[in-house]
Length: 145
Image 1 (cartoon, helix red, strand yellow):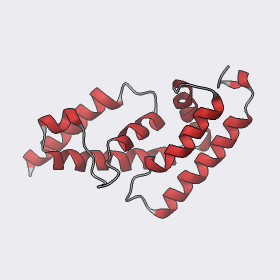
Image 2 (cartoon, helix red, strand yellow):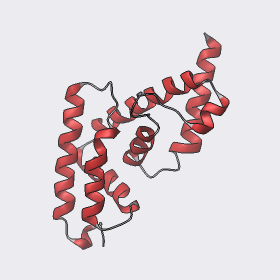
Image 3 (cartoon, rainbow, N blue to C red):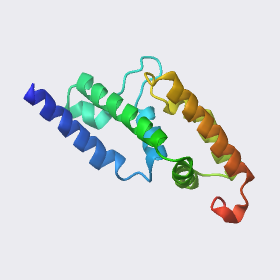
Image 4 (spheres, one colour):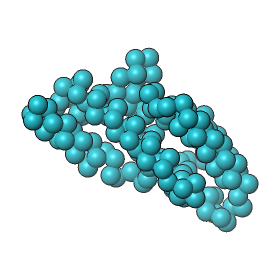
């Protein structure tokens, strides 16, 4: 049992320090973790971590990290989410409209599969509101400015 806990802690450490910390914020981290999930199976995998640790254990850890990050993001205020999403959007290539459309098209995949329906609905609603805010923004207000 203690060995299992130690391995989980080491995977969390490796995932966090090597892969999540360098990212700009919660939305970028959420998109990154979601991209580690196989759409067909729902299994999470990471080439580096699975080469070192048991793939089943890696799946468990990434699954939990994805859920926790998603919930923490939704615990933040809409203004904080707006600021965080703005950082993410500014790192994407292209014009504002294209960046916002990219987020709207991909944000559904950022939702953990096991998230409660009410959190899924809140996330979708927040994404819609934030997209509208960004599309109405003046170019000098932080995006494309």
